Length: 73
Image (cartoon, rainbow, N blue to C red; front, side, top):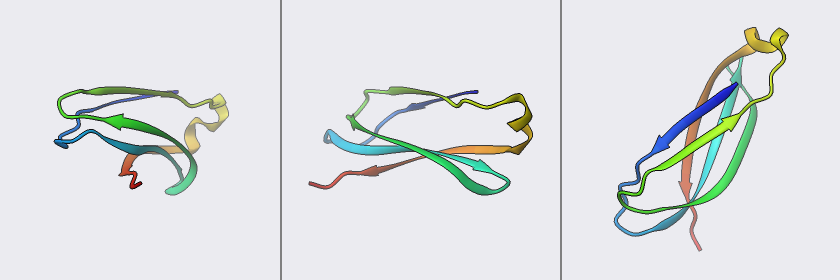
């Protein structure tokens, strides 16, 4: 399964973020993938993830949500 998103940052200053893909199964968090990315104003970022699933697992898949959190140094 492929999950894609385009993030269009609106922060004035470039900042580092942790972007997390949360995979839900039967309403519960089943898996989480995270990575760090630098986001800057008017510089859209295209993101794509490939989630390995067996055909027999497709009915257990509910949804995917993406969260991002600013990294503080």
